[in-house]
Image: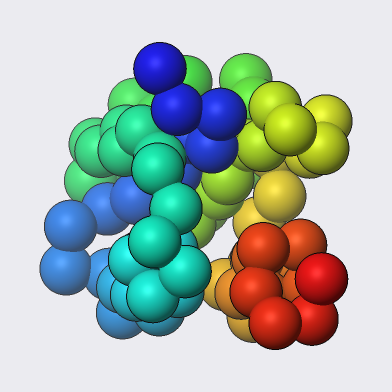
Length: 84
């Protein structure tokens, strides 16, 4: 099992931004596709306290429920990219 879990909605451009960075950094991650209806997104809400995506968790660094694509991309670059 991968240490990073990535919650996404297929077709979401903000989610695609995060997926691109994960792939660019060649990171192993588990993808959880959330339902389109916000009221059905109970799993991501339990992790992050909100129903929006993208969201990641990272067991390597105890990150739980990080949201906002720009923040996630910056975190991934700083933690796993050239910025580490």
